[in-house]
Length: 135
Image (tube, rainbow, N blue to C red; front, side, top):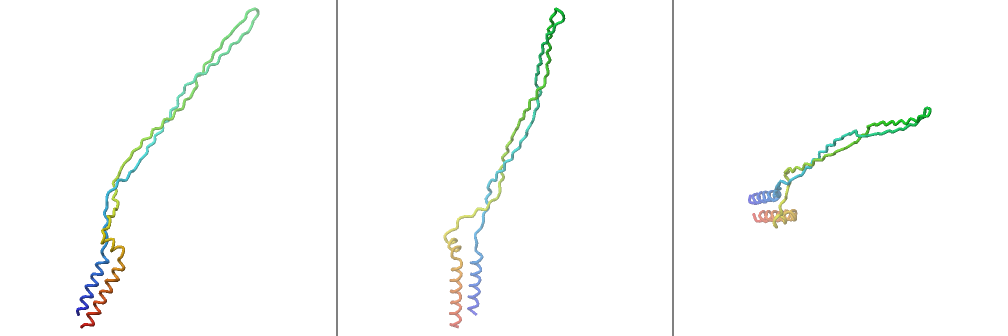
């Protein structure tokens, strides 16, 4: 009867050791987003001057005629591209998991979990064997 009680207590202790774990703490960390907006404007400007001069000399009898002809054409295209860039930076807080450093005992439990469980199981079984042998 007593060995059943000790067995149950040992089993409960073993289950409690198996369920121990570390907690994760969430801390908000800024996340940056950058947005670029580009706008391009094109301008066409017509601004040209063409000059055509011609001089002709001709004779009719004993008279010399001199004619001047001047033609002006305005055709000139100027292309202009203007680009504006707007950069907008935005920061958004996002939860990020941060783990705290383990204490000495917690680190020992993490590193030596299996050996501790084996030692506890051997001690529990030896106690059960001693109690069964005595009674």
